[in-house]
Length: 213
Image (cartoon, one colour):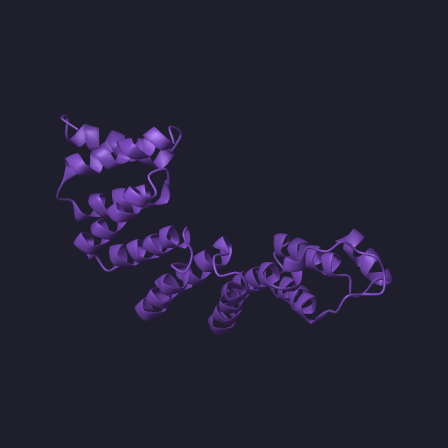
């Protein structure tokens, strides 16, 4: 903070200093102060001094940080606005679509989630993100059959992707019908990620209850 303030004393509109000041304020627990600093980033124009700048700081990167701050401040409409703006700029920017998806999931805004999934499907790897968004939605709605179908398709298309396998294990465990399939899903996760603690724990619990898994 001391360095940022000193620098801004010389260059009051320097984008990187404003952004880093926001990061420092957020780490210090001053969410409102961080939001104010990031708002200045979006309002700032290039200064007359030399500076190397990540162009995302005047767009999607700052908008994502600002949206997360607004969410924590209870300003969910403002959070949605900035996440949507970030995705308009970068349609598959991972932090932004995950933030927006979580916002919609918490509010159970199913149509918003469907619209987000449609947006993500515009690119090749966006299909994976869209499947995960829909998988989480169907899981919360306890539409287990639909969730399994979509996630299995995603696994077939992206066999090295971990997230749809993790979501499939959650679906099978919550459905509580096919413990053998749940066990296999957990082993498949560990084949890709041997250090996955959640999968290790869940598989150990299953084995305690069902010796044949």
